[in-house]
Image (tube, rainbow, N blue to C red):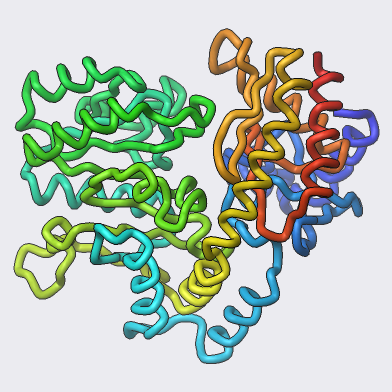
Length: 417
């Protein structure tokens, strides 16, 4: 962090983050762990298109995109208008609303193999619901997750993130989660075959971020599908991040025969949302007309504002828009391959997503430390990415923005080296 930013940090801590009895108002000064880039972080005050401005007046190219959610940039006028219209008629109700039906219709049109939707407030909630639904239907308790995948902060799915993430989770809960090595077909087969009647679900991420946005192999996906069919195990696909990569997400693009698909982020147009999309035989457990229905609530699940924003976002994200951001993403990575490669970094990913990854790092701790240093180097150059190096292209960007930003990233990596 530069000296000027350090001074700003101390000033901010002294004047903003302290409560009436001298304690930090937020634990450590942050409202969520993923925002902790140091002892202090700048504060966003406004966003428009591909730009945001912080509380110091600094203008930034927004490649964070609210952790990939804002696929159409900040304050897109069509989305703002949709939310404004919905809000004028009421923020939320104790009755179903028509927006929920229309949003669900858009999702099942995009994922043609699935027919029913249940909304939640986040991708984490959708994944927790998927696991509980699978357990209820199968009468089994254990789930399989792939090492290095991140499926939100629910207890059942955090063990892939190592010992630090396991703190606070009971040993009995940890014992119900089996972690299988990424892309290890034999390990997946052996794990299931040893006792297939204990597993309720296999969870897959089709572009796992935490291991550097490397897609699983066709052979691994084929084995997961075969095992799930043979043994009545729910195949659950996490597309919270990757759904922006195709009209029907990667589930459709890679022809994955999923039972349940979990969505979030982008489908809410910048507002809180989660969705579980599934086959009717699996989703039947959520039918309130059935005597053995699962209890599922959420006061603000499927609220009109998130539904309206999400519908507008999906309508804007047609095939032409997907081609546009996919081409920009490829241009972005191509422009970075050589300058980053000289210093052992790699621009991994596909479509409109990229992760700036230090391929030479020896362990996860070193990866995180390097990416935090890169975060600050980029921030000082007017570029905002996620602290783990993820960049997300939005439809309001063009080749000029992409080229200028790629050059700034190359310069930052050169400095770090």
